[in-house]
Amino acid sequence: MSSHPSEARRSFLTRLVLAGAGLIGAGVAGLAGAVVTPRTKEAARRWRPAASMFDLPPKGPFVATLTERHADGWHETRKETVVFIDKLGEDYQALSATCTHLGCRVAWDAVGDHYKCPCHGGIFNRAGDVVSGPPPTGLHKIPVRLNPETADIEVEI
Ligand code: FES
Image (cartoon, rainbow, N blue to C red; front, side, top):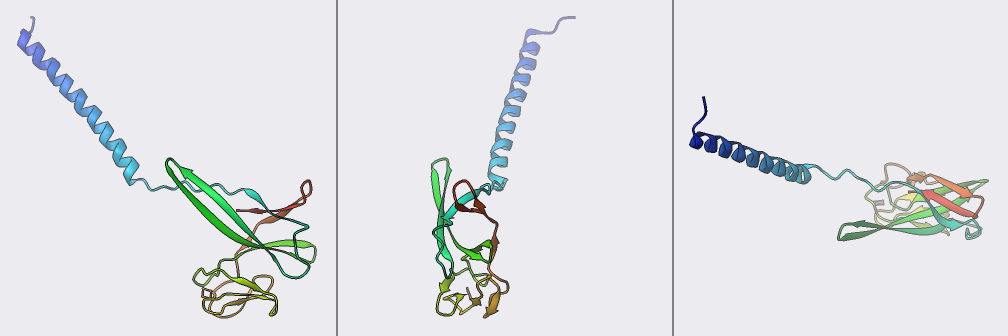
């Protein structure tokens, strides 16, 4: 039993419409996924030279400003991270300059021999611990190491 030509054409058109609808559905789902999915990709942490071991002043920390460039298609951003590099005894220390209270940038006060936050008067000792004021915790400690080949003090950020 053979089918009627108009029936075959109808069946072909039905399959064609279904295939088109499937392609459109897949495209819409892909777009929705790209819009809805949050960007979770974070810049990878890596060791970066922050100072030469010969740069460190005899008293107080060295202030290193590290600039990182992120290019995402046509969009480019730059992120600056300020780190205090210090040598306490035989060990190197790297502290974030961002106050743990509300994020202001702390500064080294050589007279007081401590870090001081200009916003609400938070005081941190040379090791980064809170001495007084509103900061809830000490300054964030950043992994640090000495590269013996270059004499660079490197931080992991
Ligand atoms: S932001 Fe530093 S004490 Fe408030």
